[in-house]
Amino acid sequence: GATIGILGGGQLGRMLSVAAGRLGYATHVYDPSATVPAAEMARHQTAASFDDIPALTRFAQSVDVVTYEFENIPTAALDVLEDLRPVRPGRRALQVSQDRLTEKAFLRDLGLNTAPFAAVDDTDSMHVALAEIGAPGILKTRRLGYDGKGQVRIMTPGDAPEALSAMQGAPAILEGFVDFSHEVSVIAARGMSGDVACFDPGENVHRDGILRTTTVPARLSPAQRTDAVLMAAKILNALDYIGVMGVELFVTAGGLVVNEIAPRVHNSGHWTQNGCAVDQFEQHIRAVTGQPLGDGGRFADVVMENLIGDDMDRLPELRAEQDVAIHLYGKAETRRGRKMGHVNRVKR
Ligand code: ATP
Ligand code: MG
Ligand code: MG
Image (cartoon, rainbow, N blue to C red; front, side):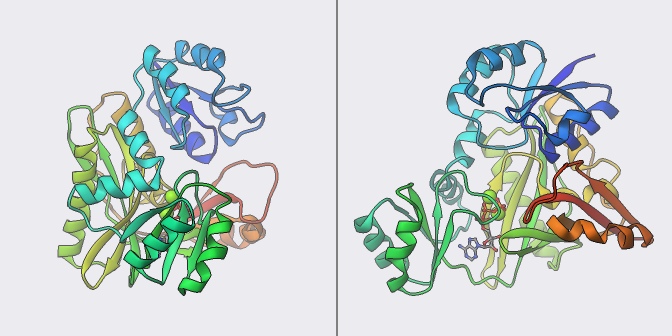
């Protein structure tokens, strides 16, 4: 059978490997870390780094198709991989989503609503950005931020100098604060033939910048639900995308606003494991291997709760609850703020 290569061996890589195995594929995971959650489910290739060209070459040659669980693949790595094997989703999705400025501009050019934004590199551009956008706002590093890291709120213009120095010289983006009532996300998939299938939007609650729960159904009117799905489809089509993508949206009085996109399976899509016949992981594997997509229909209401750090102490109680599916990532060490697993509470 064919072998799927996955860049990154975290929990997403692990759950992708499980899904791939179920579909009869072998998986090779490339991750510089010595111990990774995916290693128990896949062949694990370590390397010096994600820039290790000889190691990447060997990796590509050992697989039939390359996919990934995180979007910060270095360009040099992509060059090597693309030369040898198909990389799905493709380069354009990575290019757009690796940089918040490129991403916001892409979304705006598609005609979608985003927060007002401007590039901030130094004191001068900060002045210009503040004059244009005003406060409150959020200053974010353009690259490499996740779980709310690399973000500083600017409540008044007086907060600007400190926020700027917190960026430590990294290129940043100032976003106007969006007055939203709640946050939702669409987990969308696009297959090789261009067909798009979306899961029902989930409603997301964050704590300390980290996703805490996703609830389906989300509080959305039928029109908003349609709108959310159409927006996601527009994004995937524009990128000629192959695979699963997470699209984060703000719900506002003036309509849906796109926050960010993630060109991969997404934490807010974990509910699909127990709410759908074909979950986001199987859907992604189907897409990148050129198979028809599942329709993604939902057969239950689900609340997904992340188990972060000490939440692991609650496992005995969780195990005693009815209709709670437990998903653990096999991480040896529990750390504060670390995603250790999640549970899906299913209401039939
Ligand atoms: P993730 O872990 O989802 O990748 P991230 O670090 O990339 O997160 P964002 O999604 O940009 O960060 O922001 C984290 C959270 O901060 C959002 O889910 C939202 O609650 C809040 N937030 C971000 N940008 C804005 C904004 N422009 N206006 C209001 N709230 C915002
Ligand atoms: Mg993000
Ligand atoms: Mg986010």
